[in-house]
Amino acid sequence: MKIVGVCCSAQKKKTTRYALDACMKAIREDYPQIYTVTIDLAEKEVNACKALNHCAKSLTCGQKDDFNELIPILSDPDLGGLIVATPVYMGAMSGQCKAFLDRCVMFRRNGFLFRNKVGGVIAVGGFRNGGQEVAIQSVHAVMLVQDMIVVGDGKPGAHFGGTMWSGHPEGIEHDEKGLETVRNLGRRVAEVALKISQ
Ligand SMILES: Cc1cc2nc3c(=O)[nH]c(=O)nc-3n(C[C@H](O)[C@H](O)[C@H](O)COP(=O)(O)O)c2cc1C
Image (tube, rainbow, N blue to C red; front, side, top):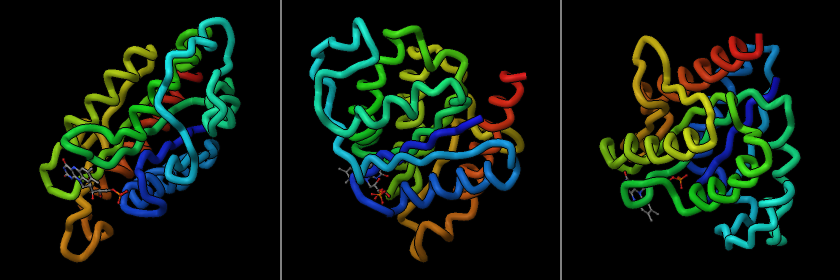
């Protein structure tokens, strides 16, 4: 089984990627039977959906950008879970995140390929309470429209997902409570994905 993490920051190798990497590492450590794949949108060109509607009939997109190389990774039946990590931009998900999620409409239109896949979300904000939970819930809404199984970070915290504060004066790696939420989110996505596959 494969779990895919998508980093939706505008910047390469910054705090959102740090949070996603910690989440994926926790999955690999606790669930060695699962392999992880990370997609970093800062390294790719994935533009907003232009409603060309090529995907109404087949798993193809009319735009010639890097989303096309993501189609086989995301439509692979081995996919068990999808973790979306976004920075908080203006109290919401990043534009990169929305562009990616809109382009994923093709998986809904071609047989609901994300149906019963487990979805979890990480949000990283510059402020402690900068809108992480609102950003997470807006991604949850998209996951529900894809007929996914949405989970949070599970026990003992059991809240919305992974929430991190990049504004910690000593750096994001010192946001220990936040780190625990992203690790627990990964474990929870893996746990439920394995239960569903049984
Ligand atoms: C356009 C923009 C809007 C932002 N809005 C918020 C916000 O509403 N709340 C918040 O906590 N941080 C906000 N931030 C800060 C980022 O969420 C924060 O710096 C985050 O760690 C960036 O992730 P990165 O290091 O992966 O780029 C904003 C940053 C940008 C560039």
